[in-house]
Amino acid sequence: MLAPKPAVTVYDCQHSTSLPGTPIRNPSSSSDATAKRTFDETTAVADFFNTCFGRNSVDDHGMTLMSSIHYDVAYSNAFWNGSQMVYGDGDGQIFLDFTRSNDVIGHELTHGVTQYTAGLVYTNEAGALNESISDAFGSMFRQWQAGQTVENADWLIGADIMGPAASAKGYTCLRDLSNPGGAHCMSRQPFDYRNYVPQGDPHLNSGIPNFAFYQAAKSIGGRSWEKAGRVWYAALTSDRATKNMRFKSFARLTRAMAKQLFPDEPAIYAAVNDAWTSVGVR
Ligand code: ASN
Ligand code: ZN
Figure 1 (cartoon, rainbow, N blue to C red):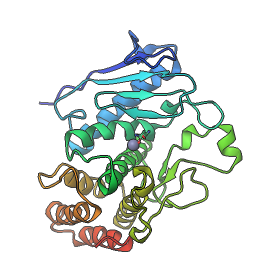
Figure 2: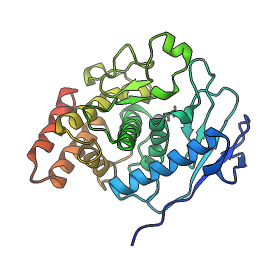
Figure 3: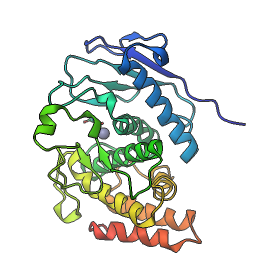
Figure 4: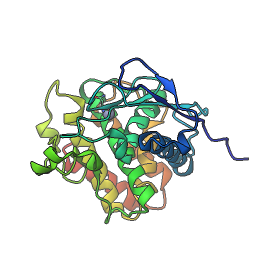
């Protein structure tokens, strides 16, 4: 029997900061493009987790996926607040409406998945892992929706929310899993453990596990979510995952899961092992 799909609800903050705001009756047929997009993409993220990883909503128990849009005035961010997603419209100069990037929607929902699984705290290495898991699954969702392989995927986070002022400065994304230190990234990141920034923001140090994920997926080849994604998902949801995990512990879990899930494909373990080793995590 197929698991029922989680309900998807959308609320309009009408530029206030009180949550959740006013319910939008039929977001799937709303004349507000933001409402419709939020409904469609949130539904697609639920399909992605269900189809690719057998997960029923963020809590794996069909929890309703709730989103509030038009949060605050010119608010240039989006976040998971522990029970729902919240999206700003951006200032229209540096950032456009945050619902425009499907990877951003995937990223925020994945924070919910992490909360219900490994429960990674949001500081130090565990915080950077938390952020990286959201980028990895956000990017995989974007690739899955577009039917891309690791070769033709763009691996970008936030490409579709770059406003004219950001584009004018040459920024094509917030972050790039395939090149975290590139000048085209609005938020350039370290991508080797030797350049880890102590007490750094999780969004900074996530470049290190991001680059490990990219390299593992790239050398395995094909579709990122089918092998590398399953290995990362198994590590995230493992009983051995802990909320204060450091890079090394998470890397060790991915190595173990690569062997467990793909015992007849040693190349997958080798790709995962080499990817972490190349970013300085042994
Ligand atoms: N958009 C950001 C994120 O999901 C919000 C934050 O800083 N937590 O990572
Ligand atoms: Zn995040």
